[in-house]
Image 1: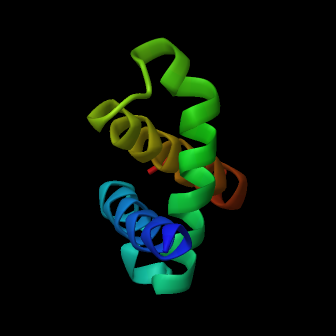
Image 2 (image 1 turned 180 degrees about the horizontal axis):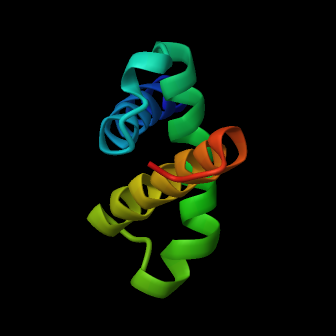
Length: 82
């Protein structure tokens, strides 16, 4: 059951991050889930210790991690961040 929740929350976080970074049209649902899960890991590792990763702030750190991941991908792909 936890895996299903991870996939759903990861997909939502990845989708929201892709909307913020304007890459939503370029990626599908699978990539949104991957970005959400990997972004959550980045956010938990980098951001959560600074802002506290419990409760709602855990979702915020996951979202910020996904945005950072998309910014890095855009930087490597295009040479600039949108």
